[in-house]
Length: 250
Image (cartoon, rainbow, N blue to C red; front, side, top):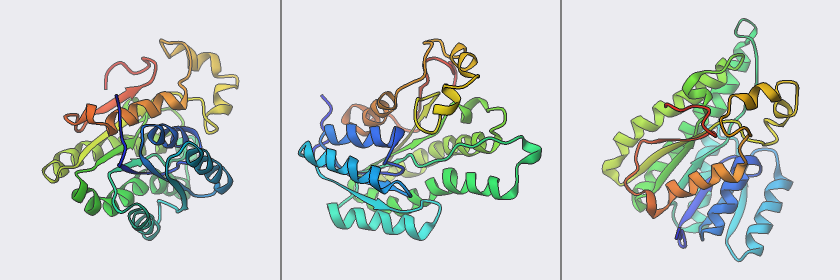
């Protein structure tokens, strides 16, 4: 039912985890996919090879979203390769812990720089192109951005701000034909969260999830592809929770 044939997508942080699942599912739905990575070139290249082997178009491009000039170049390269841009998925992000009294300026700036400023940099660069196609933006937030997260205040702050950014841009960009939404995952079993989900806190974490398990990357990707599709043309400014029921009000 979902057919993205002819659509061109750019996914940041696309080489692993949720980003990789988004790239794979978007390609399966027919989209051409630009796979952004910062350090994981072998993983990005393998993903591109799998997508191409399935008969879809993809290419990998290295960029640090926290650097505005790299974000701009990444968008321009995607448009040069594909001809246009229809979908931007802002997935690139980091997750680290620190007690607030020990949180250094550098740690705060790194978190905000990648998660929030990186998202802003990508949107600012992409919007002129998305206006031409009536495109879509899907930002990746987190349950931490809705309810906070102990020992991760800088992460929660960055993800909460992404929700506010999404709602603001949904109102601002709608007149230009751009639809802006957000997916807020809970615990997802990825490389980034594997240590926590396999450690001493695993039982406590799972107790807070009514479904009793962590999510899978493809379950988050499913929500992203839905928001990218014709099935969600009247969904704008929404925060779509995909968390097994761990946050029942958003």
